[in-house]
Length: 214
Ligand SMILES: C[S@@+](CC[C@H](N)C(=O)[O-])C[C@H]1O[C@@H](n2cnc3c(N)ncnc32)[C@H](O)[C@@H]1O
Image (cartoon, rainbow, N blue to C red):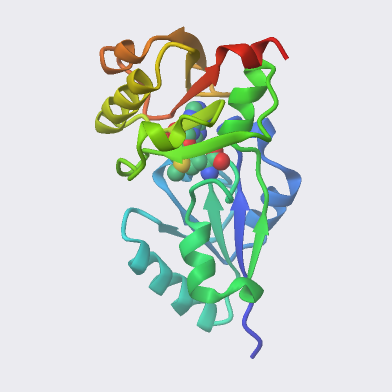
């Protein structure tokens, strides 16, 4: 029996109309859907078995392998684009690139830059979503457009500290619940990030002031 490729489908930033037809078709063709709590409401019409990806990545990979060995089509749903901090990386590392297919999605990062009307080919994306990254303000200083992922309180404290060190030549935007009914985008100050009630779906953009004039 030839085993099917594991499909990793990007499901966009939240709004239903930003789920691509390719991702929808893959999800509806699945025998097994791997879903996080953020994505469990998607594709209610699918009769596929649903497995919660939870926080146990190794356990999730074991479950994917077991279903795949039974000849099943497993589809891993990722928020946004699978190429931006998702389960895609550990899944591809385990099963190998030739045994996986990635369906791109619209990233929340793309949406944040689209809202500001700025290009993002030169952005650096850092995630404080799960844990604070091992990187210093000094290392980030050369980057004009910084994207910081994560609405965790601890993550926001770390982000606030980094932004204070980077100094005042940047404009900071807090982008919450992008494409969802509660979408908010506000210019803010590094200090405020630790005082506000911030959604767990939040991106902070720190953009050098002069880049707004280009
Ligand atoms: C594990 S990362 C996944 C990113 C995803 N792969 C993407 O391309 O958007 C989760 C982080 O993405 C950001 N995020 C995802 N959806 C968002 C949304 N609708 N609005 C704002 N930030 C969002 C938040 O920073 C969240 O902590």
